[in-house]
Amino acid sequence: MITKDSIEAAYCFFHQKWKVYEKSNSSTQKDEIEIAINSYIIQMNKDLYAKIAEGNDSYLLDHTTFAHDLSSSVDRLERLLSLS
Image (cartoon, rainbow, N blue to C red; front, side):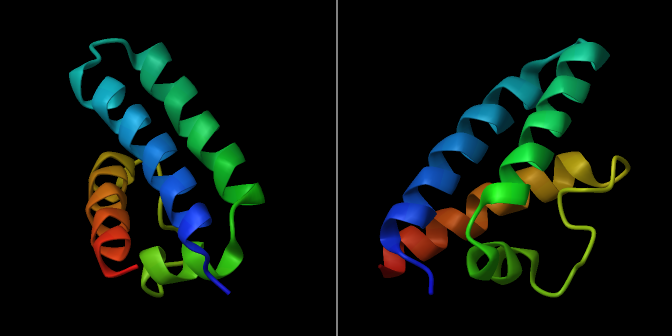
């Protein structure tokens, strides 16, 4: 079950991390953000992760697509918030 609280929490966390990530010139900082997101995913609502991942098992977990995935996760979570 996906609660509005779980959507809000994920949105706030991902949005904040995305804003730092997209402006960062530091590969170390970007790596730290990837690690933080990975840690968050481990404990986040599994149904919510499945919904935003849309069947992609490596969503937000693949270094090569991370920037795109993080940006799209913010958009997807924002849409879910508007529906709840």
